[in-house]
Structure formats: structure tokens, C-alpha cells
Length: 262
Image 1 (cartoon, rainbow, N blue to C red):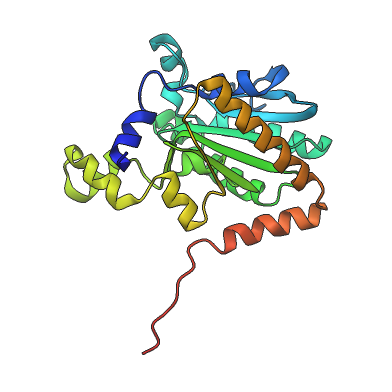
Image 2: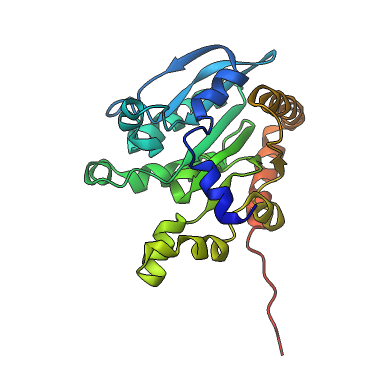
């Protein structure tokens, strides 16, 4: 498949949502709401539950499955209160020693005027800063689209998984085409330039694992669950200092380059 075909695949109506992955992976879950500052954002589904026998905190960006849900969830574009809710639960997980599982599928953060008034940029920046030093294991799964800072705010993790057809980008291809060429119809060209596929992310060191999508959803989640349990066990064996240092070094090496000294 071409990069553009993968983009169309993750945008298709039949694509499993973030909430669907949580339902398949987490048992005995309790959903928690609100950022304790403004309100609740339905675009982010978050709470606590069990991954096998391991208690975890889960946070998922959810686009919804029908028009009414998608309107309520801003089509999976979280508002500031959504990111603050996510951060509140991550800090709670750190306090009680729970690993954190994030499911990412978003075009990007909500860009309406009311979101800006409530500090959208600051909420994302706070997540990036706090996740870098969070003293508990974090694994993020890019399940569909990983668009810009809206996705990165839940992807500063110890491990990043990507589904085979998922994409991860600094900007939506549509936005890139509109900015570079003033022509949003050149989205297929933008996709190739941006290098947004899971294979690209593996090559760049942004993702550690690409998950094949060659089976049904139940089998897919079974494979993801087994990988999560293994990686959470490994990460939980590290001291807090080792964990945060390893995470720092993971991001420190991204974007490395060599200068031509001639």
C-alpha cells in the first residue's frame, strides 16, 4: 500500500476507535472524568482497569462511531480540558505506581477559539514536559492518525507502538498541502513528502514496534495485549531513575544528524 492509501484506510468509517481498543484490552475498567479546572472532554476516554492481571491507567483519544458521538467528541480533536484530564490521571498513576497506556487517534488538537481561550497550547506543553519525567512506565499506541502536537501530547512514552496502517505526522497532509502549495487537493503528494507511515517511524526511531493488521480485531488486540504485558513487565523492573533516564535518552537521540566539515 502507498502512504496515501494507508491514510485513507485509517480515516475510513470502519476503523476501530480508541474506545474500542480500550474495551478489548482492559477489563474491570472505571472511567474517570474532568480536569478539575473547567470540565470534561468526551474526546478523551480515561480511567483505571486491568490489563490481564496488571492494574493500569488508560487514556484514549476517541473519535466516536456515529455522527452524534463524533460531534460530542469533536471528531477526536481534544480540547484543553481533555489534555488536562489526561495529565491528572497520569499524575495519579505515578502516585499509585500504575503503568499508563495511551491510545492515539486524532487529526490534531481542537483549534477553535474557545480552546485557545482556555490554553490549548499550554495544556499540550504541560503534557510534554510532565510526561518526560513521569516516574511510571508509559506506552503509547498510534492506532490511526497521529496528528501534530495533539497526538504528541499523549505520545511522550517509553515505547511507541504503531498499527501497520497508522500514520504519525507533524501536520495533517491536508494542512501541509494547503500551506506549501495553497492547494489541499495535493494531499497525496504531501503524504509522500512527510514520511508518515509506521515503517518511516521505525526507521527514524520514533516507534519501536509495528503491529501487523492481517487478522480480525480480536486477534489483533490479543497480540497487542501480549506485547503490552511483556513490555510493562520489563519497564516496571527498572528503578524510577533508570526509567526516566532511558526515556530521556530515547527522545534525545531523535533527529540526529552529521555535519559535512569539508
